[in-house]
Image (cartoon, rainbow, N blue to C red):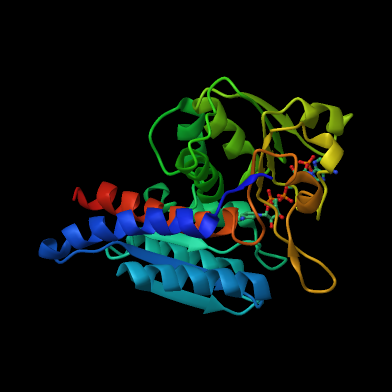
Length: 283
Ligand code: NAP
């Protein structure tokens, strides 16, 4: 049976280290600040925003929360972001995606000051990732890297198959793995014989958004499987992008859903906010 990589425990370890760093700031009277913006009523997004606010409170960060109606005009959202860009007490800005129809996600990302881009999706942040320069990395893939490191899973020289090529997860994931010297293959909806490709992997990272997409027979014996997917079944159960029951008995390590990558995303958002704070204050 596979080692179960516990995202809650790993995220707690990241946040405990951050708490010590925040403690050291006390004499300065300064603390990291995060603004979270939610547009609309998406129930899952509301839960994520609530968790982000709670993480700020636990760590003693300053936080601001904006809940805007679904019919918010794009210019009003962009204007709020410009206001947050100018606020010295806000070091990080997170706009919760997906946005309601009619709002241009890319425009929103590009309006955020790259220094405050704690979600790592601004072209400036992505450019630094491609160039191998230090910068703010997208929280979910960065969380996967911390998780692999926490469980001492070697990445260098391994065959890694990333399924999904989104700007938020798949692409930055592939680049972070490449930076860590993995041999990376990226699969997507046009990939042919995807099962055969996945079978070559020492490490599989699934970020597709399709419940139980990765089948047991596609995964080689002893592979490490990281499931980024969060899907809700018609019965209301949360499941990942891999068939956990079929894969866990043959994998050497696997992340559960829930309780795997999800908590890491929030921990890395807190880490990125701290990094942005340090960069902006010099502390
Ligand atoms: P996305 O933007 O919809 O991208 C999905 C990717 O999967 C695309 O690149 C798509 O390929 C690929 N894909 C779709 N169908 C496929 C198929 N039949 N075969 C192979 N590839 C296929 O989704 P995302 O934002 O990356 O999110 C992926 C999943 O991760 C979702 O379940 C989301 O909820 C979850 N997620 C979790 C966290 C977390 O904190 N745990 C954070 C973010 C996202 P094409 O490019 O060819 O269309």
